[in-house]
Length: 199
Image 1 (tube, rainbow, N blue to C red):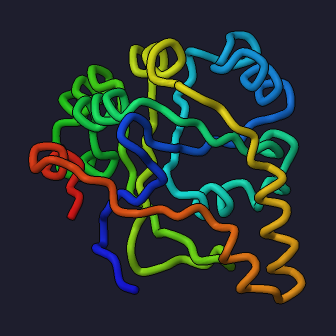
Image 2: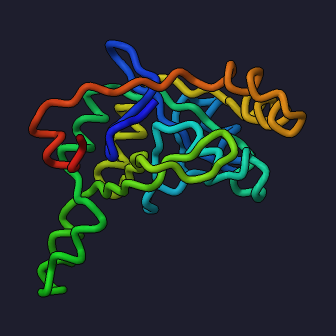
């Protein structure tokens, strides 16, 4: 199956869309206990990156085995309204190349609370594919909205990641693929498509 070069694919329903993040035990346990992120241990002042692609999250975290800071994978269901707010208040990271005036770029960057990156999507072996997956970086007011309004449900999917990795290591690829989340194209209006250069 071929995909457009830049397309959001995700698990979603009428109200929510699922994104993934990797954290240490302290943040993961706190978040699961409270149903959202609590500071501390979560740091509100830092940019936090959310990813709708499960396999991109597995690549980033090494199937939750890369290091202790990313040993827990959380699936976070956020409101579609919040997700689309983030896209509408975003700036594409690669747009920096278009600015000869660095001061103008910094001013725009500092006044925009969401950053968008399109990175190569990954296959089940975590190798890069020709099409891309979206990463969404939230800062300042976007983090506050994410934590206090957008988050609807949090699920620990670390065991799922470990199980899939086990199947891959044992060359049971069909069993591994059967457990992958069913991510399908997310509908975007023309304005949002143009904003994030989606196809």
